[in-house]
Image (cartoon, rainbow, N blue to C red; front, side, top):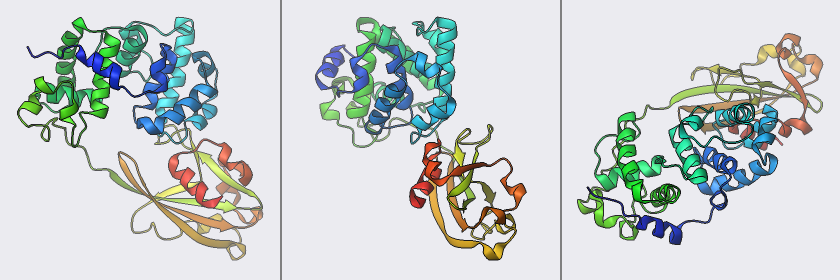
Length: 347
């Protein structure tokens, strides 16, 4: 069987990037970094990592925090369910494990928001547990090295890769092996234009030997993102405005935004907020702001309609369920990125 010699550990020790979470065995800090990096590039994630562990330096401090406080620190990272799951996991660790991270991989996987990869990463990096940490980088390296032709990211493919890498780890230190595999994927075995001549695995790599780097790995097809049209209303009334909290069953749940409605493409460019005002003649209508915002599953075309009036001009029932805030305090609330872009334009 073709084997990855543990010289990849030596390669890693000489070539690894200096990253703050690699200088610790603290499972809490390793966990925080792994959750941040799930949907964020390393360069972007570093300042967020520092901010997060400065605000919440221990699992105890995170478990005791308020949701709005955590979401505000998380603002800009997106995929906010990650932050909410971190809070839940921190509370489980406090209540069930007396504030100590479990060392067992299966117990780690039972924590909210921790899947196979994160459990293996925390387990191996902090406790040297023997379990392959299979993320997108490792999938790509393994698919090319072994010449795998199943679509990556499927349970079948992950199981196959896990079995092969588990055997490879027999003569290696699990922590260094996993770190090296991830680093090779991030720095050498890139999706486009891999640096094969610099790769420590090049002499045994099936893709390199048979010129399959542009073909492998095979990926399953993704659904095209849905197009959504949103209209927001920004009411400027003598230094105050209104915002609302996203419902629990929605994208960006728990975050704040201006009141809004979803419309069809045909009506999206028309002002939908005429019935908000008792005295429309005394309401100043400003030029609307329009933004395109891309999510993994949605393409959002958003219009922010701006109005200036006295509070008495607003229909009272339109303010029900809305939070009245000072404009000077608007940036203190946790908001999603689209809302943040609008606020940046306004203030």
